[in-house]
Image 1 (tube, rainbow over the protein chains, first blue to last red):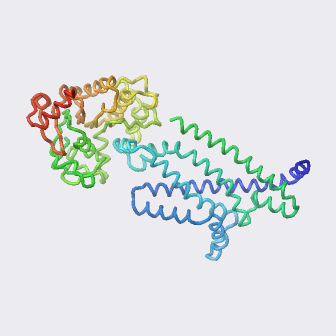
Image 2: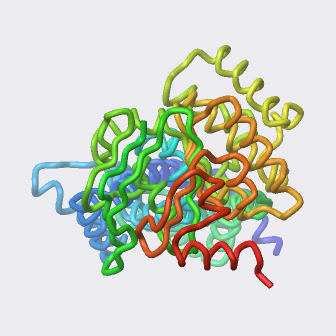
Image 3: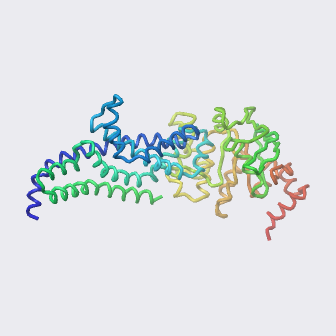
Length: 217
Length: 243
């Protein structure tokens, strides 16, 4: 135990560099997946057949490819096609695209859970599609969507570790590098696990808060 | 003002409207009665384009109702609708529900809309509930807010789709009272209802619909007191004397 604390004090600052990258990758891909997911979901519920089918196929293609393969594709294959991305860019793009499929299905479920009477009431006062979405459907869907959205945040935080496979020196890779040069596997990986857990706890509490609020109405 | 001519409508294989021809004049109160499933609500929903119709024509002030044409917004801002289940926006206060249309669809100045919204809530007896959210209101109060929301559009006519059917019996009177006052003020109203007392006292005209056709129509008192058609007689007997 004493050894662990001594190692912790030594490795903690190095691992913090990894934490910074983990947070950057998580937030970056969270934002990207949210925007893309919203676009897919809107296409899906647009009522325009071509858009809805395009979105459904995109979602299925994205869902059918493992994140790690998506990352390899962006980082190793894109340069052959003339597009060179930094490891960080590829990580954010890959995770963002991969998670956009889940976000889209989540958003769509929230939108479709809104009572049809709400949409009719909006139409009956002359609202068009977009105004109905903006003023009536989305504000109500947010309450339904937030708890699963929080869960996605937690999953993305942990899945950001997959960026290590394309050389992004985030927390997991930082840990692996220290471990392989010091052989202090137990200390290092315990520390890494604790650091992920520490970052997850606020998110877990946030989800609980969302769930309570959604249950109120 | 509202004209329906030979309107047909099917849901899949079931033809719910089989050639409805009727008109509603400005300032008139028309009640539509009939057994459930007879197509009463569908007529209302076709008039403001919530449903499409297959054949025939519906027009409002000479403008053809076509739910896929841009003109439908114009029609909907002139013909408001009150729903059986109120359909208030639960995430907005009573006042916000009322001003939503004028503010965001008709883009009227906020101060003016707020003033009118408060006046309308007072008119339906809910001035003190302006800041309450719909779930905090009783069914009768919610329906009165919904009527205020319909009025806020300053419509030329209001369609009521069984406005009291979802209410506890003791709350029906408040809503009917508000509607009667509107009728007295000369509002053009089409009301699908099971409230025969309201139809008799307030309506100018009653249409009895069964099986997707207008079986009988005429002045409220004559249709309700001396129905000519056997089906109307049978329906009224069962509604008025259920035991």
